[in-house]
Figure (spheres, rainbow, N blue to C red):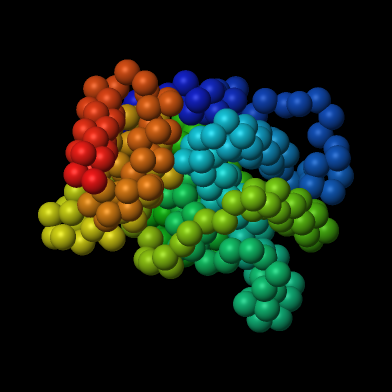
Length: 300
């Protein structure tokens, strides 16, 4: 698994995880988040107020990269925040329902944007939170083996904080605080999806898909099988999970070419070169594009 992370991702990870505990940097007054005073059940757990603050910051990175004309990078930030916040909100809804709130679960979560762990995870496979929070709900339900497997799956992801996560206090929070937290998380989701809509297939979750190099390998395998549409899907997911290595951009450009989506290939090439202007592979692809364009012009 690649550990090459650009300064952009590094900055986000430092802001997110490099304090004295996971999301542990306190920001002064803890009131005013998620409906007012922080629920005392949090204790020494991972503060949900800091989680919300960091996710809002990540959304702002999405806004900035979108404004800078870097749509694939913007999608990374929006989708990472979307998967993370959606997983937290869905966990809160599960806890509320398990504590007797609502009737049928499907009706209880009907007003939420995305439900179901596999669907939320597909928004961005690089987020460890869908696996973590699904594991937490399994633990709350006494499904120990399932919980351990899901915790293990989340813990190996690149974006999982070294200090670990502890949101088990959700089980002890007051009902009122849980509803306030759910509403705050929904509000963050509204800001994420104000200008972004994820493209989802609804396929079964692949727990190895947090690694963009793994996804790029699947794209290459699909090309060998002449499944060019599938190859492009995997390449798009690779960019969405980690647009911080030029090799991922090279693979995405090639997948788009094989799928005969030349406009998209050109867009990927332009954005990749904006971030990696001296990359030999991308520069070579640019020359190939230019030569092909010249040949077509001469043929006319």
